[in-house]
Length: 102
Image 1 (cartoon, rainbow, N blue to C red):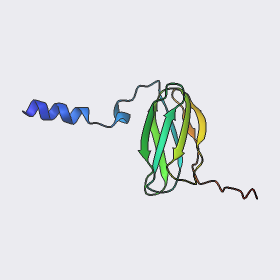
Image 2 (cartoon, rainbow, N blue to C red; image 1 turned 120 degrees about the horizontal axis):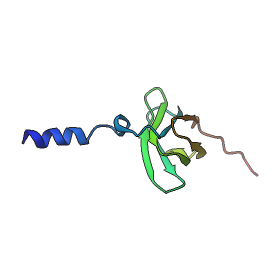
Image 3 (cartoon, helix red, strand yellow; image 1 turned 135 degrees about the vertical axis):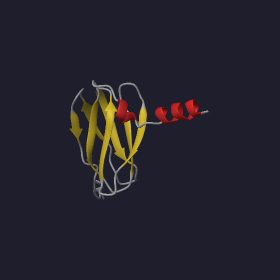
């Protein structure tokens, strides 16, 4: 039984703790405590993270490629950027104002 509990504890470690060295990251600021959706545009994989209480966020362990990142909310426009191995890409996700087109 102890072996099983130990195996479960090891498999629930955060992915960032075992990320491959050929991955990159995206970080920046957003609204505090909001969900952020990260989509790999090359393979379609999707992951979600939460911004911290101070509004900062970091998505780590990302394979190199093109990504769309969006703060979950109706006034937030997605950003598209590239991730390179061993590099941190930065983008802020503050809401963009929708201009009045009338």
